Amino acid sequence: MAEPVRIEADVVVLGTGPAGMAAVSAALAEGAEVVALEAMEHIGGNAVWSTGYLAFVSSGMQAEQGIVDSEDTFVSDAKAMVDLADEDFGVEWDETQVRLFARESAETYRILTERGVRFSRFIPRPRQHTIDRMAAVEDSWMLGRAFQDDFERARTLFGTLADRLLTDGGRVVGVLAHSTDTHGGETRYEITARRGVVLATGGYQANPELRHRYQPSFVARAPYLGVDTCRGAGHLLGQAVGGDLVNMTFVPPLVIVSSSVVEDAIAVNSAGERFHDEAGPYEERVARMHEQPGRRAWYVVDDVVAQEKSGLIGQMPEPPVHADTLAGLAAAIGVPADALQATVDRWNAFLDTDATKDPDHGRVVLPPGRRHCATAPFTAVPMVEGVNFCSGGFRTTEDMQVIDVFGAAIPGLYAAGDTTAGLNAVADLGGIRICGGFTLGRVAGRAAARGADDRGEHASVLHKGMPSMLDARIELVHLDPSTTRA
Image (cartoon, rainbow, N blue to C red; front, side, top):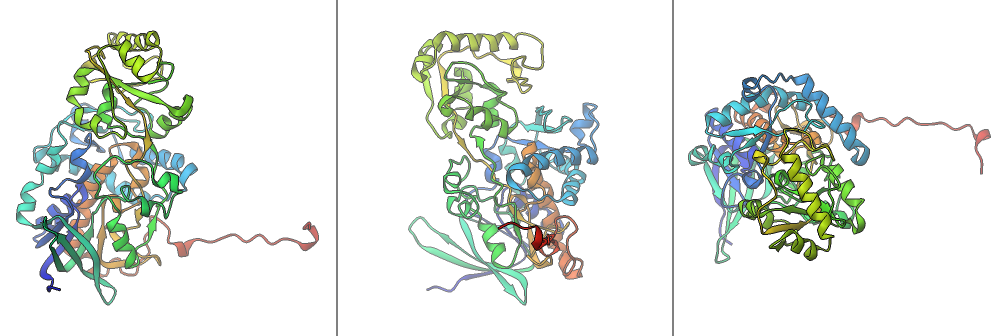
């Protein structure tokens, strides 16, 4: 077997989604020599394929529109989301990290816009974000292009997978990795990190075998929409050196669909009628679909939307159905034609008004320009329950240094984005995953480049956000034997 290619750098970043892009950029800004590993052939991860919603707190865009936001308001919204998720998943959150995001996210907005990313409008989600703070990117590929120059300065190994972290005396000092060419030939790498390694490999939603460790089989194998490289590599690498994973069961179900498609679609049940707020909270969409006969329902769009968003519609788990007329579409999906026609007519009539809230289901996310569902042919896409994201990951310090199961920071190891748990516990607010990756990835890359753990700041200090398992105490109930019953 050939000897591995040996590479040295100050900082090694695994993954180039939002967290990895920001970590590479921040480490370079600190003067560090950076090597990045990416499983795909381009940077951007899931973000560049997404609808592109980012939530910022007290951003310049909010200020321009006279919207007053605050750290405390965001934390209140986040806490409401945690309380809701805790009923189903038993969620731990890190308020310190949530506050850090709130303070730093406006800087993320400034950096992105200075690099040419344009945001078109706010997406209202009043039941989650009590203040408009979730903004839509004009083109999600702008997010990758904004960091392209950084990756020309760093050394980036595309099509490369990390296999193991290297340690020396308990410190993470590098990574073993490999790549495979089109002829099946393999190149192995041994990459030394003089200051730190940043785990930014995304989530584990594309790995049903890993999900099965934390979920029942039928849930773990539910359909997934997204890039197939989100297989939990960073979670496994960090766990192997002692990293403490939490919230791993928190893989929230949702109806699989791009939010961009939802903006233009209505959903109908077997009676041909709308039955919920199509753009409402994810868990509510699932609950309403479960109430429908046979759990069957369809998203309906016209030809303008079907053509404009053909790529997104083509990624959905079941194939779309097309027909030249609404009556033909109704016949194809087995719903009453007159009911479907009446439903579409009622929706279009609402869009003709100046009302901002749908009177039937309270929907506030409306088609851009309030465009109608009117141009033949028409398309119906089956609604399917599955997953897009997961929220489990590592506990970290405020410098995004990974914490081990005993509550101590692991020297040389940092994490950000969907490999972490503290902020992702509130990600169902919307717009948090991409912006959280950019924001806390910047923190991680900067800390790694500065070698924060070398200063001894966190090496033996228990993190104050999430409690260590050793901090947990069980209250013992002592029974009086005379009062017990056989």
